[in-house]
Image (cartoon, rainbow, N blue to C red):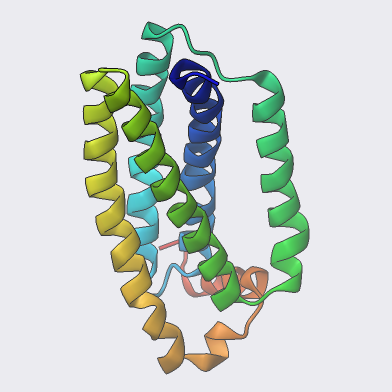
Length: 176
């Protein structure tokens, strides 16, 4: 397998990881809207939205497409998580699951950046470096805030959907 082939397999995964980072942290932020966890979760989602636009431009300039199958599979996994997994796990585990997805993205982008550098693609490598700087900071902030659950064990063990419903009732507009 060549570096080009490797990049061809990594870019669709990068797109899917960013789509998940756009969606799941925002859902967690809505569920935990009355907590200090919400702001950095929203920041990850906003960063992902911005990154997807840049990534689309970079991929198109290199004639890389995201696979429709990969997009559909990613949406399926997201839907399964939203409708099934979040019904079975508590708020703290859901938060850690979101953090795990963010960490997966960090590892993936380290590899995408390394392949780009090996190919002499300074623009893509620079994008990855900037992305990593921002997302690493956000991931570290989210990790540091895990301790919030230790101070709020009743919220840690609540199901995410019930946490969301409680938060919706506490805010007139349904969100913070």
